[in-house]
Amino acid sequence: QVQLVESGGGLVQPGGSLRLSCTASGSIERIRTMGWYRQAPGKQRELVAVSSGGIPDYADSVKGRFTISRDNAKNTVYLQMNSLKPEDTAVYYCNVKGARRGGFDFGSWGQGTQVTVSS
Image (cartoon, rainbow, N blue to C red; front, side, top):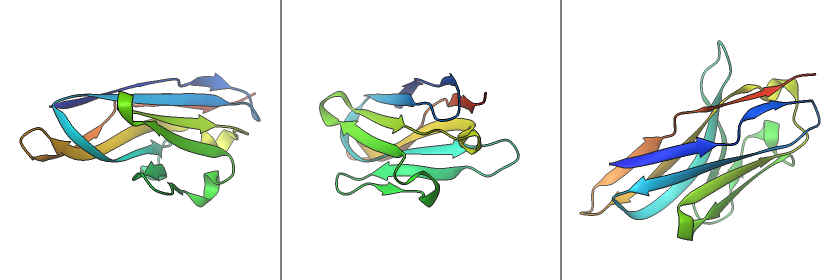
């Protein structure tokens, strides 16, 4: 099994910053993609940012404000969120896809971390 542990959520004022982190552990042979999704109350889960090792992909709503990065040695993905807006309020989930030892693919979700942007 592959487990993901997230941290870094919280309450921040509009215009503020937060940094989320997510670390994968377990029987990992190789990680292909690491990404962040979010789900606001009453809405579907949506992609925020994803990294497959090349140029990251971002939702239009966060381009220029959020930055995804990876530390492959630590199996960790980060999401630096700047200039936060109230509409960024959501539960943020990390998602990691890759291959386990033995060659079987995996796709795992983190437990979610709440981000609230409010004055």
